[in-house]
Image 1 (cartoon, rainbow, N blue to C red):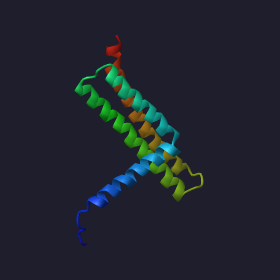
Image 2: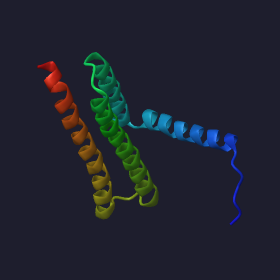
Image 3: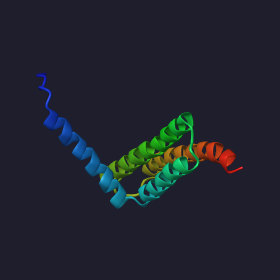
Image 4: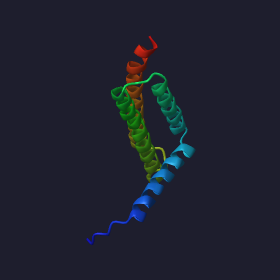
Length: 122
């Protein structure tokens, strides 16, 4: 296999593809818009309550986890629908597992947020 030479243009183009995918996610997926609103809310709350650097890092990690699982869940759902458009119990199970991963990530993020923000409210 021949190695390709590094190209800044190619790297920038790959970022454009990634941003286009993220934009499509926000346009097509209702849950992604909910995650975006929650992310903005967490960022605003972080500034308002002056979270520490460590608290901010925790919020970034759990918020990133929600986004990553949402993106992967959407990929799993789209691939399954493309490969097997008919209803099938195994496909439903696969899609439910992927959605469950998002729920687990979101639950983890909510708990982390509560642990950080409730003491600041009290």
